[in-house]
Length: 277
Image (cartoon, rainbow, N blue to C red):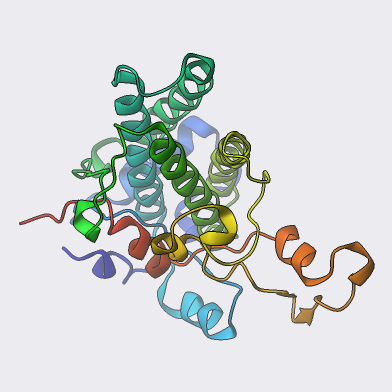
């Protein structure tokens, strides 16, 4: 089943009781998708982009997903992060001693996120895809687990993507308080991961500009930062309103833009081995 087909359904927020307990909500998650054919989903989250009105309109009509689908998008993202950090920590000599505790903590968080989402989804959880962290599926040849600088750069890319992807997901859950709460709990932790890793690379703790180069990464990773040069918020162009406080550059740094499903897929395609089936 293609990823696009999974997005054909619109969320039925009536299936979740806003006053339900977390345990009851989990039971509803598990039963929601029974009978629906679930497939291994590429690295992506349903989302809404504020960069253009067209993206907003597209979201409203085609990009909403069921609660089960949204959780599976998040699960696939967490699968990727969990495996990436587990391999990194298990690779002798890769991570310097003074950084091991940091990545061990981040890895533990990702392990917990996967366990949390698996518990929520039960039998509806998608299988873990096959990942290639050299970027082979995207035509890259990265020395990810041989060169700490490469590992660190890729960590930043994944964490920055995760923050924007979870923000994109939040738009699809705006009327679903229970799921929105869970998504934002994970989102805030991913944002802390991103800030920590960025500072370890000598970057600011937040995204700066709309290109990979402006964030210290190779140009091939431009899709991670697509739309981050936006200065229009709520229909108002803020670029000329704060010239005494950094101008347009400061405005760009003040807002994270959500990633759409297509944008996240473009990034994930570099690292997910296609399913031959």
